[in-house]
Length: 469
Image 1 (cartoon, one colour):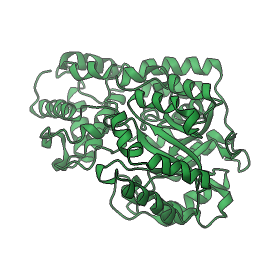
Image 2 (cartoon, rainbow, N blue to C red; image 1 turned 90 degrees about the horizontal axis):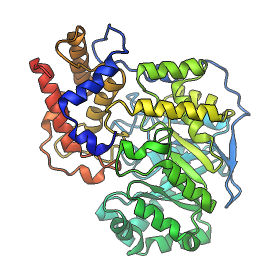
Image 3 (cartoon, one colour; image 1 turned 90 degrees about the vertical axis):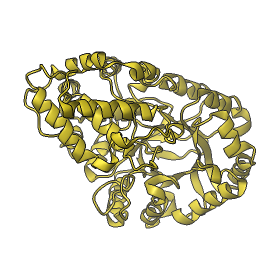
Image 4 (cartoon, rainbow, N blue to C red; image 1 turned 180 degrees about the vertical axis):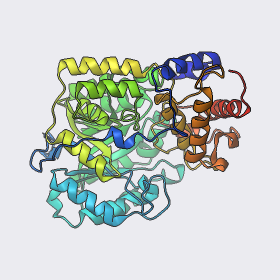
């Protein structure tokens, strides 16, 4: 469903789609949308320690684990993700996660100065520094998003600070972070070209302090095509792209600004540039699919988790160097290790099955939020991702009130409202949005967030007042 269409979807049409979702769910609804995270990752087989699937980087001959550890969601002491919480990172648990990952062959760790509210690099460096330097590859980014960091001095200072935080004297994979965001090529030039920062990084690569230089792509396809058009000059060692079984052919249906992953991967493959994969779960949405879709996935491969299908899809392309997963909890890590130790590549029939699954998923009018939190903090205190994720989860699980005339309306109404209050504190809910638009520029998915806040707020108020839809 195209993003523009979703913005203009009227209440009657919206609820008509939801009605189809509700028809396949159980008549009994819990008081609040259920948390399916654990069931999505359930798998019971033993995990071999010597069966990790590896890919060879053609530039440096690095033998890279096909499962890469995304360090955006390290656990906090409160048992939440440090991406969501200001609580201290639980370094002891981080160390345990790294120990299990390395023991099972994971050797690629992806971080950024921006992750975990600026604390990811340090926690990652502490955990990895306990191992010999040749046991792991560190990927980090020049995350100079804010205009205050666009100067040459500020950008280079950020780069040098990464070495300090990570406790290293070279970086294996350095990325220009989030190219294509904001104003596209104009913003890219301000961050990397006009200030001479890209020239500086190319010199650093020549000196060996950067072993591989690439970029992560979000948004404006003109920037992606422009950077690949200069590949002979820049000699990109890798490129990080969003790829999953929905975005492969349907990225533009999710969001009109997106580009199908089939095109992105194809352009890299033509040039022999390895692809690093981000968002294999589409911001978690492919591990928390609608119940009847989850049932079909489990029926086809009962011993595997729902999430494993998305990881197998991303890992089945020969030009993929590693597939990133931000694993906060041990059960997530264990499930992904089962998928990649070793990888069982998809058959042609499996790929056709996932294409059918993608088309079914697109029937549900979810908002294309990937929980990246680039829209945060909101100056008026809204928990923007929390609002959108609760809304999406209830759509996927069929816990959406569709009509006051329906027999299950009162249970569904209570489930949505109670779940909303549990997920998002009242002072951070959608009714506090004033439409300042400060968040819109920062959203890689190009969601018009104030419009979505108004739409959700009206939906909530209608539920509270018991209005007819």
